[in-house]
Structures are given as C-alpha cells and as structure tokens.
Length: 194
Image 1 (cartoon, one colour):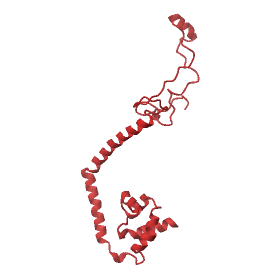
Image 2 (cartoon, helix red, strand yellow):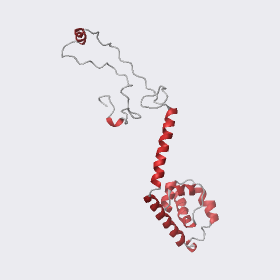
Image 3 (cartoon, rainbow, N blue to C red):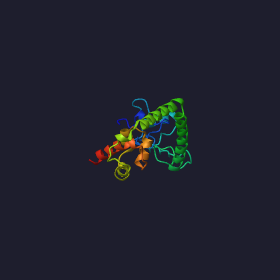
Image 4 (spheres, helix red, strand yellow):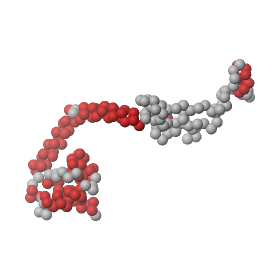
C-alpha cells in the first residue's frame, strides 16, 4: 500500500480495519504530518502571529482500544475482548438459528422435503432383493464395508448414494442404511482403497 492506509474494503461496517488490515489509528507514524501553512512561511511564525505557542514536535500518543462490553484493553482491529466476544457470538447464533428454523418451516421448504421423502419411498418400494449380488450380505457389509466408511468424507457418501449430508454422516458414524445403498457404498469403499 503506497498511501499507508488500508483499502476501503479492508474496513468493517463501523469503519475499523478488519482482521489482518493495519489500523491507521494504532500504527505510529514515522514523521508528524505538517500543518498547512502559506507557501514559504515557517510554521513557528504562523503560531507567533496568532499569539499561540507552536504545536509540540513530539508524535501524538496513540489511543487505547477498549472492549465495548467490559472496558478491558484489547488488540487493534478488535471490538471486544475474548470473553465478551463469546457472549456476543452466542447472541448472534441464537438470532441466526431462529431465522433458520423459520426458513426451514416455510411452505416451500416443507414441499421440497415432502417431494424428497416421496422419491426415497418409491425407491425403497421398487428395490428388489434379487438385484443384490449374493456376495453382498449384511454380515459382509457390517464387517468389511461399514468400518471403512468412517474414512470417506460425508459429502462423497451423500453424492454417491443421493442422500443428504446429515444422513450420510449417520452412515459414516455406523448407522446401517437401506440395503439398496450397500452396493454403491461397497464400490465407493473399493475406489477409496485403490
């Protein structure tokens, strides 16, 4: 940065620098900024003409940054100390959770969930045990496939068998899914071993 100031995008809504951006109010300047005077007129003569003493030549002391919650001294770029930041984060999380619950129970979300449930119910009803290979038994799944699923990412499992990441996480933790998924999971495990 040539000017010594952070870019406008490096500031938060309150005008303070974000993490990693230098805070111009806390960074000491190497030379004090000169006061504007008429061209060629020394600074001391301007103050003498006004009848006031000249400005001190020592740099101005930087101001301390304090926590908005408790008043404790904090680092540059922060608004709260660690203890107060946890409290404000809890409050924000509660507000966001309320918004998420409302959005999850909207008419559109309920309709989408119902459509997904109907698709899975049709797939379970259409599945025939005769399609399953004879070597793929419940015992083989539990002993050979299930333990290796813990090493595969939740998103990879979800993508492979077409389920939610929440359900895939349950499978990864040891939940036994419907047998129609066993073959795909066996192939996923086999691919991860190679």
